[in-house]
Length: 391
Image (cartoon, rainbow, N blue to C red; front, side, top):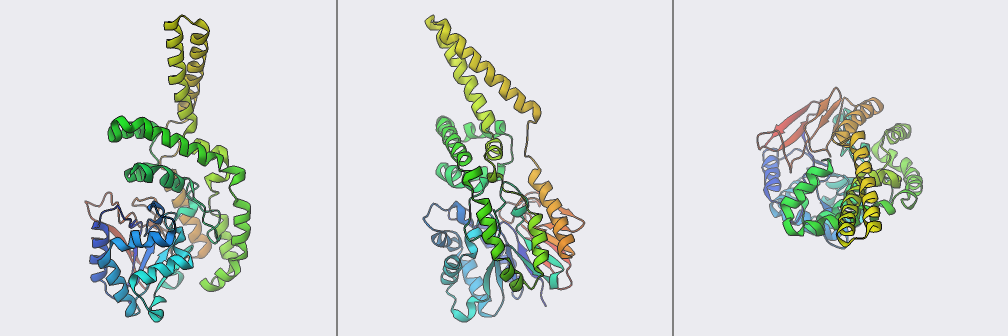
């Protein structure tokens, strides 16, 4: 039995480079009979400015015609391709989206069964290796429930749809854990005179996302609906339902479940403190120039409050979130291994090379770092051995 190829974070999108898709073609041509698992965010459906996820399939997968031809040829020989849902392509499990993939690949009824999708995870090597995207352990990206029928945008996807896509700033997706000051400087360097408009759009997006979080985020309803689907899913995965319940308990609560958490995650406290400093300082200066001491006094007090609020936020912690997702995925992987009995849990999502006693991260095939320019993937052998490959 040939090894299974596991690729994380391929991030195919219409505005992206073809290099990652071409590199995957090279990997698959070197392993013609190896099943392929795309371990989440294979298709960056959320990054496409189209009406439906089914339309986004043509914009993403359709940008890689040679990869499409190869996947179709492999399916015609019974070689499987599995799309495991990530936070950027959680809609890949919808029947209309999977049908759009089949149609784009030109598969007939018999061969469609060899290109499938999983909403949560897949098991390899007889259960010795557990593979999922890993976003369920990251509060900023965790779904309300992996089996919920409605796919809610997490904090990162709200940022992507309402901010990154309109400013054509996809490079910021991979810097979302940076503190706000370096990101602000990057915005000014990138956009120059348009930077104030970009910053204004961010404030609007962040405020809107915060207001639509908390009580307006249907966490309880989604979890109830997902739980109702648990029995059928356990049967389809040939797993004990109690095991799945324990896995669910290990998942993070979405940041959007609380408005305050969302507000702080998007650094709106620092944004508004900065606005108070700038606005109050301007009012104080204007009042002094115009000889209006009342205006100058109010402006000075507002600016002082802004300075104190910003200082307090920074003193508590300059960078609140750097490394948090990596730590939570590592802990989640070890817990998942304990629950499932898997020898190795394979995750992606954080775009870094990471490992632990029972954990291996795919790293990002689209955005490799630390591999001397080569793209990382994993080979899972039939005996459960997991090996790193580079192309």
